[in-house]
Each structure stands twice: as structure tokens, then as C-alpha cells.
Image (tube, rainbow, N blue to C red; front, side):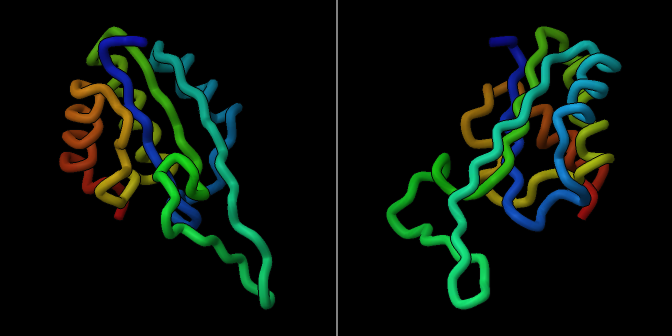
Amino acid sequence: MGAFTAHLRYYPGDPLEEIRQEDLDRIAQDCGVQASCERIENRVLGDGLMQEETLDKTIEEMTQDVITVTSDSEEAFRRAVLALYQKYRSPRTPYSFWGSSREGERVAKEVAEETGGGW
């Protein structure tokens, strides 16, 4: 794992558009970082609505898209996080950076504060 790692957790309805691996690959290549997305889906259709039982579930089990960005360079990492926020906006919950490295979380929060995060 690089010195700078952020797990950006987006819950249903958070990102401005669908998160696609090919977009992440382009951003990663342009910025010189590694980026991937894990899609976790635990919602079910019930009574005509998408529903999810979250009581007694860990954060890692809830429906979300988790973009992981890693780099050894703070400058490259910062550029990648900025590009992701411009495309999808910053994650919005207090748990948005859960599992990130200390330095990765620091930079991701700084970029969100500097840019307004898209909210």
C-alpha cells in the first residue's frame, strides 16, 4: 500500500454519475496513481422499493461503491482525488474515508474543503 491511500465511500445517490472502472483507469493513468472500485450491493426490492436492512451491519457490508486511490506521491494523489471529486463529487458521510491511511484521509479531506467537494 502506498503512503497515501484513500477509500472514498459513495452511497446510493451520492455520486454525480455512475462510477465506471474505465473512468478510474483514465484518471489513474493521467495522475500516476492506482485506482479501483469495489461495488457492494445489499439492497433488495420489496413493496416496489429498493430496501436495505442496515441495523447490526458493519460499514463494509452496506450498499456502496468504494473507490480506492493509492500513491506514494502526495502531489499525484492530490491531483487524482481532485479529478475524482470533479467527476463524482466528494463523499459526504462521516464514514466516507473509513479505512484510509492517515495521510490519505488528510489529503482527501483537504481537497474536499478546498473545492467545496461538489455539494
